[in-house]
Image (tube, rainbow, N blue to C red; front, side):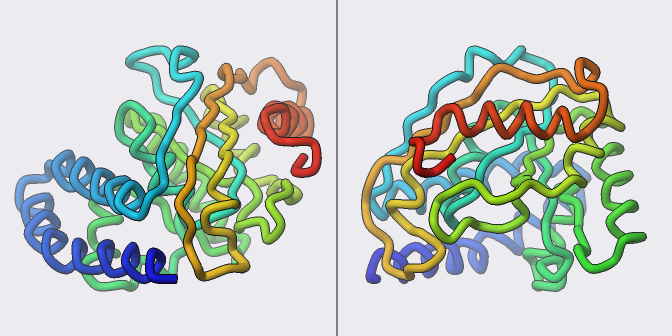
Length: 234
């Protein structure tokens, strides 16, 4: 439990200390690179400080200078601060709209072109997809957890259809990612955080144009993510 409290305090203090000047600089200059770089490094540093090591496999599948839609399984609050800094280049993320109301934090997300999502409003969801397509066409990666929430038992949950509609509409390659080890360190059902090793497996990109519809694309992505999970988690 001490590790979890320490991690949350580290992230909270970091936001309070470096957030306002970085957000002010980004708003003044229009350059969010420093904000993005420092924010993602602090997120990753917090994970390392509480004893979670990070291993990465499969980055050789990514083509330099090209942007992708990364889709990963989701079992822990550790997943985003491990995955996002591990991706070469700048990423956008689909984020609950409520988080944009948080002072400083919400402003930083807007400046970083993160995309708000309202799961309860279909019209707003369509606008979110359109905003995400615009972000992708500006050259940013998109990180999506297609289950929509963290799995309580580490097993893959059913996928939401929206991310695959986005992939088909944008025509951008999808990189399935398997996250291993974060469930053992900090599952949704336990506040206590344990040290361990988180392993990221980047699979070869999947071209949406090779599939007749989003259901077929969804099945292909799910199969790829599951291929690196132990049988009891698939």
